[in-house]
Length: 378
Image (cartoon, rainbow, N blue to C red; front, side, top):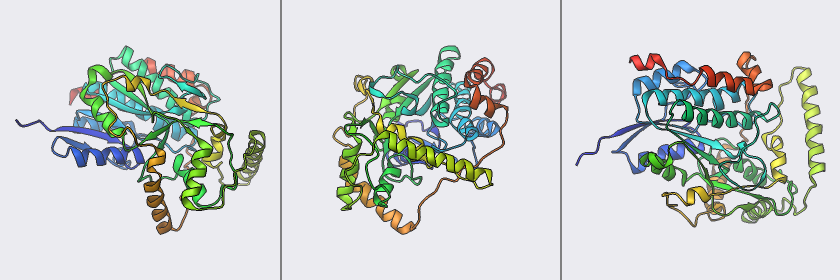
């Protein structure tokens, strides 16, 4: 019996998560799923017309959003890529009557242990750009499901690990710092636990969610390994694999590490005043998380119909493979990837995102989540 081939559109195919999903479908379901992953030059999340036009032409059977602005992005870029873009994707998916899978982040959650899907930070102007934009996307998608009938699933990831990450950030930034011997001591406390998410397993969950919309439609799910990981143990294990002398097993108190960060922030402000562009390294922006535990409960997903395809795989079992892959690539490149943040002009939306996110999200809910009339005519 011939199975009708379906078309899926994935935004963010150049990243670790997006690339893993594309490879999964092209390897396992080439005759069943035609997965399209347009480049940002062809479909920019920052351009509403790009999104509407592309999806109206392709008319896919589902949409997956795995795109994200870099952790250290300025407010406008974070707002457009992590909030407004995903909401425009959701509006298109709702207009076409198709499922929308949204990849979110544990940055939307407070510190703490065994956090559930119902837990969330309070929306506030004081949140960093990444957390604020990701949280706003979650809130508006939930609103669209309740008010507009959006068929979506939200997957929250913690610290992601996997191969083929061409942006050195998150876990891979820490790994790089150890390999480069630029981490002299431990910037954390003993027994600071975090959850980790295996990029290799994620496509299995997405495929299962798309096949079981009645169960997974409208839900948020934490996607993390069963057991959390102690940060110091992980760092020292990587050090052992690499046979390095650094970092020393000396724990730097938070007050001392934070004082160093504040000193660097003052220096960067002075450099900007004389016209030099300088930004705080992403690892220092998220220094607090090195000292505060955050573990996500996988209970909801474990009690669902999804079966973990690799139940025994963890960050520790993947370390030998990741060490070989990344050290080989970094040695070939012979350079450090830097963050090149583009500072755009502040417009009204960007200012609202910075100073009054509650107003922006209310305005989006009032007039920006409805079906798209131009697409309905095509």
